[in-house]
Image (tube, rainbow, N blue to C red):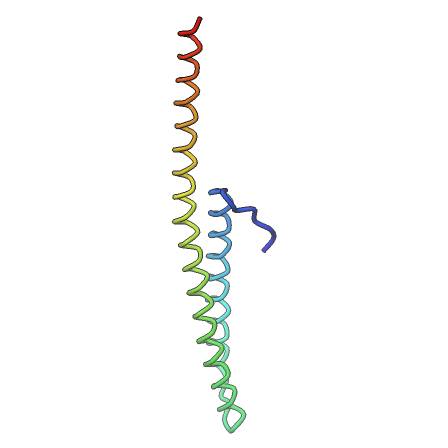
Length: 109
């Protein structure tokens, strides 16, 4: 995954969200490949029953992982928008204060 410096960085937050979405897609692809592979195998007996049970558990866990990736990505996207809005508001306020200071200095002259 690498390091993402996302604190206060909407671009980094969105990049991490995109990465998590790609991980969700990879998880779905892996699960689909396993499903297709198992459908092609005619396997019977006690070991087959255990294998099918284990794979059912794995598929359940895989679906949960995909869901968590997608949920976390959505939260990051939402918070990135909020952080960006706060930063823009702070920038506008700083510009307003700078203009006000400039006017006050001009009046003193």
